[in-house]
Structures are given as structure tokens and as C-alpha cells.
Length: 222
Ligand SMILES: CC(C)(COP(=O)(O)OP(=O)(O)OC[C@H]1O[C@@H](n2cnc3c(N)ncnc32)[C@H](O)[C@@H]1OP(=O)(O)O)[C@@H](O)C(=O)NCCC(=O)NCCS
Image (cartoon, rainbow, N blue to C red; front, top):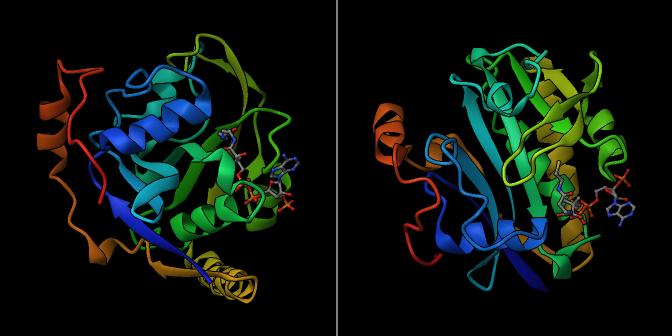
């Protein structure tokens, strides 16, 4: 039985950034941006190393509004969660890790304070059908992103409401998916639960990040 551990991280470590840069095909360090410090990162670890992760950013200020070349067309604000930078290490692909991470992220969104989750995908994204199954919908036209270090990525904005009913459904889907993974020989421990980890105060995180774009910090993973 292989073991995966899920954790919500409040700092983007060098190992996490290396995974992200490697998967996206960029130089180590080049994917770090001003939103990392005010985001949390739901990470899957295998043998102590990050093998997959998704960034969750409170939409104030808004990450896709920063990236969008002609304005971001979906809602923003303190009750919106923005999901981005989903990556899975090549060696771990096609085992359902992306599904697991997204379900962990969605099931951990608190419906009392988060009303909407938004994201942007490329039109031919392989996980698109899965995202539709969990409730994401396309409601506006595609647009171009300056999602550094890329300069011109065509994306489709997607959105799902977050409410108690969906929260329960995501919890059920997550439990079922964890069971299925376990039956296939992959045991999952840990969770993305907000109650199990401490956020860095948002103002401090933004202040600490200002002026140090692309500077490595927090060496090493767990
Ligand atoms: C996209 C990515 C995150 C998928 O991770 P993964 O753990 O392999 O995905 P899963 O095994 O959980 O599969 C999720 C869905 O994608 C589909 N999928 C995954 N890899 C696929 C492939 N190579 N070809 C076709 N479909 C694929 C699965 O069939 C599944 O769809 P379904 O639920 O409708 O059956 C991973 O390939 C990756 O990191 N790619 C590079 C970075 C990237 O594109 N990130 C997305 C940014 S929005």
C-alpha cells in the first residue's frame, strides 16, 4: 500500500515551487508570484516530497483580475475563492490525484464564508469533464491571461456556487474517492481542513511578500 498525505500549507516552500515550475515547464523559482504568500496551497506528499498541489487564493485582491488582459469577468470579493496552479508530478499522473486534490479543496471551502469558487482552464484541459461533474460551469466567454511566466494563455473562466448542499456533496465525493484510491492500493491521510492549520495573517503575508518576487524562501518540505 502506498501512502499519500494531504496538508494545507500557508507558505510556498522551495520544494513546492520546484514541483510547480517543473510540471509547468519553467525555471525553478520563476512561478513564484505576489499571490503565493496570501494563498494557501493544498499539497499531496509522498515519502515527504510534494507530488501534487492546488493553490487557493482569497479573492481580495483578485489573482485572475491581475492575470486577465482585458479584465476578469467572474465575481471577485472576500466571499470568493480562486483556485489556480493545479499540478501533479509526472510520475503520479492518471491515478486520480488531481481529482483528490480538487475534492479536498472544494470540501474544505466553508459555505458560511465562501459563496463562489472560480478558476480558469484551457479549453482542452483534460480535467474539464471532472470539473463539470463537481459543479463548475462556464458562464462567460474565454479570454487571454498574462499568467506569468507565460504571457498569452487563452482560458475559459469557470465558476461554482459554494453552499451547504454542494459542500455535503463534495464531502461525499471525497470520501468515496478516498475509499476507491485505498481499494486500489493508495492510502490517503491528512486533509485540507482549515481547522488543522494556521494561516499567516493576510496583511503580514502581503507585506512580507512585497518586494521579494522570485526570491526563494522556506527551504525544504516536511
Ligand atoms: C492536469 C493534471 C493536473 C491532471 O492530474 P492527474 O492526477 O493525472 O489527473 P487525474 O488522474 O485525477 O484525472 C483527472 C481527469 O483528467 C483526465 N486525464 C488525466 N490525464 C489525462 C490524459 N493524459 N489524457 C486524457 N485525460 C486525462 C482523467 O481521465 C480524469 O478525467 P475524468 O474524471 O473525466 O475521467 C496533470 O496532468 C498536470 O499536472 N498537468 C500539467 C499542469 C496542468 O495542466 N495543470 C492544470 C492547470 S488548470
